[in-house]
Length: 210
Image (cartoon, rainbow, N blue to C red):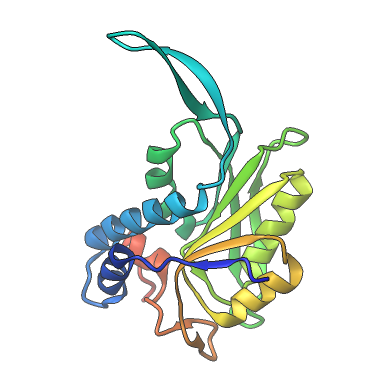
């Protein structure tokens, strides 16, 4: 059974159309990314566990429910940083830990350059954040790192995915839930998602390579 969740929601489709446009400037691109990240996180967190607590309202005592698990946000640097703040708005108590990979343009394989995970103290649920699931190399490397950390429940959140990347993740980590706004047609010969939206990191940070 596939654990890929493509979010079929009118607001997702609406904001994604603007996100894809080459004419969308970086400030608006970031705003759209935040909206889509919040919608993705809403879908990905529907099964978080709760515990009951007592509450005193201005009128009486009652009972409420609060999150009972430690949640970790794991952005893949650098583009994953664009998804952190909107998810923190929904889960302010979440911890944020970072993984950094760059892609070798000859082999298209990820090369790790940064890993910040506290040894021996894993969170209960990890949300790996990366706008693009392309070749799947960085996603698999991140899943390996977070699995080795000892996290029992890991979810992968991306704006856009290529079928090739999904296949790679499902082969290596079949029990991982993948949440995406859209599954595009394919990768091109440079490993970019088509039709895609270009380089998400460049567009988020307004730092396109010459």
